[in-house]
Length: 130
Image (cartoon, rainbow, N blue to C red; front, top):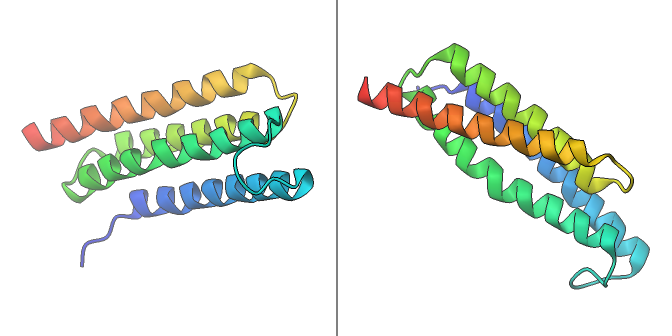
């Protein structure tokens, strides 16, 4: 049986992040009475985009991670990238889920996400090309 512990733990944490961002969007929708769209609410638009961005970024990172891990990619790099990815997504999510949070959360969250993805691309390439 193939096991992917690094990818699996990262996927669980990513799932929790997406779930929390989904709940935040639902809370804004109930509070503002918005069924579709953002109701011209900046906070609602932010929450929707924060959720969407997580859904856009996390799957490709998990695919790259899983492919590298199943092919015995460097464990240290996988753990480092997984940590950067999750910390980055938490920082990014906090900015988008709450009003008044400093823009640096978004900046550093996205920077860590991109660094993780670059690290995963390189790790997978090195693993495949040997």
